[in-house]
Length: 479
Image (cartoon, helix red, strand yellow):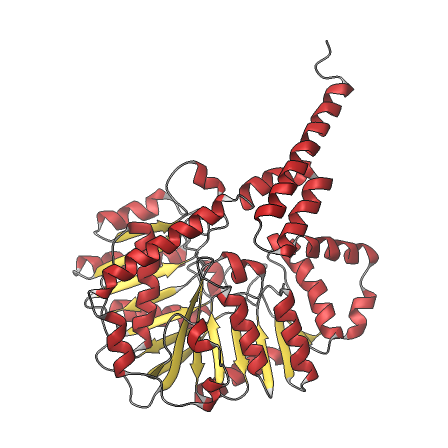
């Protein structure tokens, strides 16, 4: 018998298509969104030899099991933290003052799991140098505890600076808790982590669960970036720990990103978000410190921590609510523009209301399939009246939303399905005309260095490029 004859390959192809059909039925029954079900089902039916293994990795139904486990862990964490009288102290002492701008976000009090708090001081940090100078300076002055969470930590020059500083502070008796995402930091070597543990630093990797099989579950990612020092000062935004975020790695350099530094009661909410993630990884609470000193009559802030374990699609609904609240303008910067139907409809309606709708995207691709899908959505948005810009100097990675003259949001959430429904994200919502003016000035500088996409550009795109973009959009719900 010829084991390598053409009939054997025919049987193999038939088997793959049969398995693809079974997987397609499974996708229809288990994938959480209609778009995702269609994308998986069609690709599994027609090209199973390319999509069957990715479906086993990205589309496993065990994701729902992780969601249930995460919710159970959150409940356990809240029971443990309730003994500290944590959130009642914050809410009773520093409830948000009346604000017509915040009132326009009518869903936010219930959509956000944490309260909107007054008396915060917020500082805008533009790009890597300003961000890590501020973070390292705060850690250098730490006296009690440092909580650090990043999606990506690289063992490069910036990563070594962090490593050296944390080791030094641990030797001084400061309690340090470091959390990184196992998928985002997959290249982080054991030789980076173990010396930190040997120095007395608590280090954990965020993952689904322990075990060899969970290496194949890559959808459960923690994309948040949070640093809190002594319960006094906190940082949140789009930057990770790596030389590329300092603009030192072509061809994406210079890297354009934004972070914020915060002092005030909302830092307690940042600690609570960190505590949830740490509890999942370690089943214990990190040290939590309530801020005792805060600015009088400062900025209104609300921390929005979103993730797949939420009872609703918090991140997507935040974008919808923010866009619907706009009466004059809504400016958004995002490296990945793959909106769902609700967000895209909200953008269209804002244009019809006469709102100045602008979206700033990168002109360089770090993920080519995502860039292709984003390009098609960009052309459709331009035809709908949205003003789309592509940032020219380097890669644009910041995640910023500016609404009218008072509301802004800066954090880790992209405008794509992964941030909407799969990743754990965090955004800091601020309500303050002075801070919003600083964000406006920053974005105006970015727009001045960007190319505005014209309606004619979509018609000038090569036919093969258009096909590629449409194929990329077909699979965009599962990117």
